[in-house]
Image (cartoon, rainbow, N blue to C red):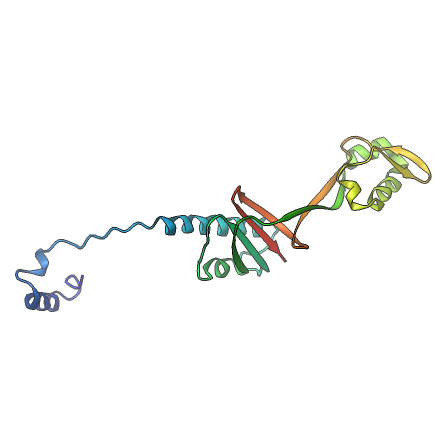
Length: 186
């Protein structure tokens, strides 16, 4: 390996150990495949790519701090902190799947449906829906009471906004695949 850079020195060293010229020897060939390293590398690429996509979608700079990120994988991964450094976050690797709970965090109204259907009662209708307990918003009720009057809920006018919790903490969820999940706790 030294011969191209220091030909005379390499030739002298070679002549003490072997016969002939080092310049007539073939290059050293090396092959080593580590299936585990290939799998870990693919997981790292997917995780960093998804975290960068998440930052882009949220309007964050790629070098903006992200908070606590937990990656749930099917196999143990030890990246020596490279993924956390590349994404500017505190990244934790865990094997298995998280115990996610899906909860209703709010509602989204479709004013294109509510406005024409309810006209002047739209504001009271939205306030009545927002006053409902969160657990009642998973299955939208068929009627809502507004100023003592039962009003039918127009189809498609209310969409529950869902969020996820892990161990009681609200997290953003990035499902990469069936066996690879990323949670972000900001």
